[in-house]
Amino acid sequence: MSEAQTELEGVNVGPVTDWLAERIADLRTPLSFELIAGGHSNLTYRVTDAAGKIYVLRRPPLGHVLQSAHDMGREHKIISALQGASVPVAPVVGLCSEETVNGAPFYVMAYVTGPVLHDAEATHPISMDDRAKLGLDVIDVLAALHQIDPDAVGLGDLGRKEAYLARQLKRWSAQWAATETHKVPAMDESTRLLGERMPEQIGATIVHGDYRLGNMIVGEGQVKAVLDWELCTLGDPLADVGYLLNSWLAPGEGEEDLTPTAAGGFCDRDALTARYSEATGRDLSLINYYRAFSHWRLAAINQGVYKRYLVGAMGADRDVDLDAQKRGVTLRAEAALEFLSMS
Image (cartoon, rainbow, N blue to C red):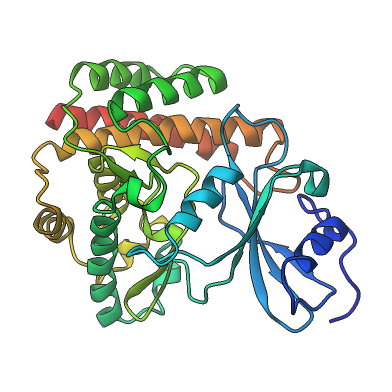
């Protein structure tokens, strides 16, 4: 490898290199840093040393972020707690909480090889046999996550266990208010109905909060590592199920190029719910409420992303269609209303 990088947005190359060299005995410098595309929130970088060994660095987005959001220490704690558990995660290298090193906290993981299925195009090289196996493994891993005792793995203090939906409604309503740039009537109405029709929570588990194929490294029909734990908390596991079902589009349904399962070959939603119910014993008769909640929450999250792009907080030279991002917020809110009409 030639000269070391001297500048990269989001990474202070020299201090970060020194920090890593103190923790990885066989690290070969200089290091190469590359922003990995696909993240709309925390920034993820591929770090390659002079011997070709690869690591992954995660840090908060650039610029102002909402208080308590993008907590690197929290995300690192979750992944560390799940090392060796029944849910596959990347091995952790370490956490840097000292902001003088990189301007913000960050943590580093080992690199897990395999594709991330961000869209249908990324799915095309996956064989039909592996797609069929992968769909079942995705739901099996989720069921396994929901059967881990948070206290037993040191995550019992990750958040309150009760009143998950009420807490989420309060949190994302506040985020919506803090980032609102325009009126979305469907958002106001779905917020009201979600509060009125909230089901009783039965038990509490670790909830990933963003469980979909685009947040997994896969290979040979299996989930090799679950990524992006920044929204993880304790609460109602059916929120994860509703979210996964919303992302599990069949061929010809919705925006095919944006959804990995739309490439075909995966099991359908009925197979997912039946397998999850069998593994966990949970009743999914009110799953449409959770699917509505998922769309509503994504509307609030996407509004925050939209505003960060609008003010340039996601970094320079990002090729983003702001009008499409804005429309997507409204479409999510309207989808929430549609599922509430069926719940």
